[in-house]
Length: 208
Image 1: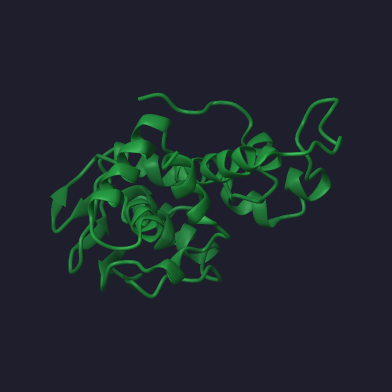
Image 2: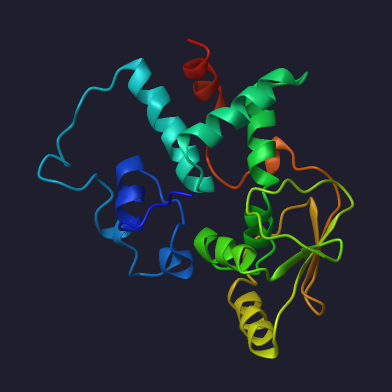
């Protein structure tokens, strides 16, 4: 699977928003976005008039980068949300929130999406006591996600929980920090998305 291996801070600067791609660093004074919130390059500070299509495209790119998915996968999520009865934009965000790597991040077991994805890939996550190493796995209501590994890994995740203790835990997750476990209490709603997203722009883009 392809992945971004370039500087994460440039992505935030390009989208004009802090996407918290580097975990704890993004909340510190070292965050590059705090110093330079404009796109990188010699023309980054220039004000460029953006068309309606450009605004829609940037919103789509921002959401893709928040959840770490590529274009083909993102488009598949959109078509799946569009087939189901309901508000397409909200259903799209719900599908993205239900990704296993995102659940690990939201539960506080990882400081960044990249770290959460690595934990899943390396087989340190179990869903209902079954090892799942697919980051895009869709969790459902009443399922239990638990971290699993050697003592050194358990210690690392426990320390991570201490670092992320001030992070707001979504209402759709019940966290058991003692047993490194998270239960899906309900499916995520639009209000549970912790980023400023205009999903209607994405719907308009794909509807053309």
